Image (cartoon, rainbow, N blue to C red; front, side, top):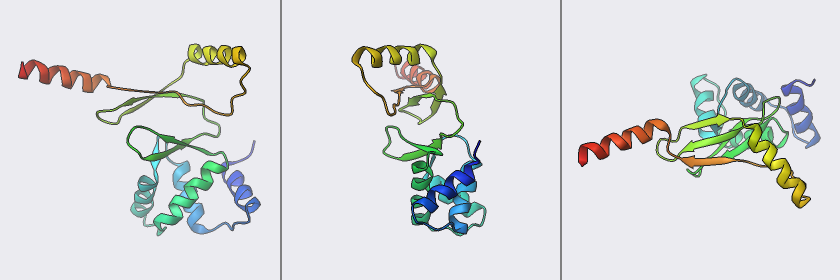
Length: 152
């Protein structure tokens, strides 16, 4: 099994790009994170670690990390592109709270099985997919319920 750094380095070399200490720093910080991180998040994390990497370099490097298959770009309802680990990570879906922005990851064999049936029925070859559900998390529902009781 190939190491993530090797996959990235092989990819940038195949694209005619050079491995730089800034790209390596972005990759290392990303590999050390979990969850969904934006370019802004990555730039802040690098700055906190006293690593001097320009915003444009972070942006371009995150795109390279996604292009080589180590990350997947995800967009929720706020217009911000985030990146999450893809390589050697289990496929999952998202529940996204439109109030507080909380993202809950979940797996569902039933959804995956239904998807296979639909693909077979229509003879459709899938390249990729996303299943994101937008609504209110339990905490925001409770806050909303609490505020409607007080104002009623």
